[in-house]
Image (cartoon, rainbow, N blue to C red; front, top):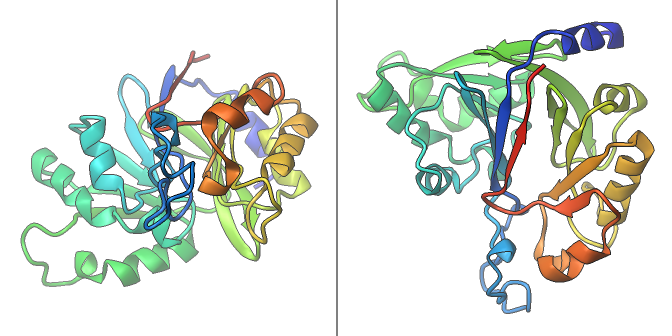
Length: 272
C-alpha cells in the first residue's frame, strides 16, 4: 500500500470513537505469578495489568484488538453483551489464546464473528483453533468469518482501519490506526514508511516494556523517543512489565503529554 493511499484513506469520514484499555500488561501480566516484588504486591489498581488488548467502539460497531488469555474476564469486567469483530496484531499466545471464548457472542447473536488477521496470524488461528474450521463441527464451537488482511486499509462496520507494519525482532506485527488514534504493541522497530502512517495521530499507544533495553520490545526511553520524533501530542504506553516500576512512581517522570496506560482506562475521540 502506498503512503498516498493511506493518506487518502484518512480523509474518509470517521465516527466518534471510544477506546477502552482491556489490558495493559506484558505476556505474564502484572502481578506476575509467584512474584513478590513491590510492583506485583502493590495495592494500586493501576498496577494490576491483564494481557494487552483494547476495545474500539463507535455508535454502531464494537471491535476488539487481540484476544489474550484474559479475554473472557475482560469481556465480563466491561459487561460486553455484543461484539462485531476481532482484529489481531500477531500470533503470540498472549494476544491470541482467548479466542475460543468468542463462542458466547456467537450463541447470543446467532451469527459468526468477523476475524481480521494477516496470513501469519491466520495460520496460527487455523492451527490452534482447528476445531472451529472442521467440516463436521460440534455444536457450540466458535463461529468465525476469517478475513485475511494485508497493508491495505479496510473497514469494520463504520470504523475505517489502516494497518501499520512494525517489527517484533524479526516478526512482522500489525499496528492499527483508527482515525487520529494509533495502537502499536509488541514492537522494537518501526520503519520510516510506517512512521509516516502514524504521523498526525492525536493519540499514540505504544509498547514500553521496562526501563532496560529489550531484544524485541521498546524500552520506556525508546518509546518516548518515538513519540517525540513523530511529534504526537498525547501518548499512552502499554504492554508493561513489573520491571518498569510502580505506576505512581513512573508516571510523574514522563514528559508532558505522555502517560502510562492502565486497565479500564477510556479515551474518547470525536469524529470528523
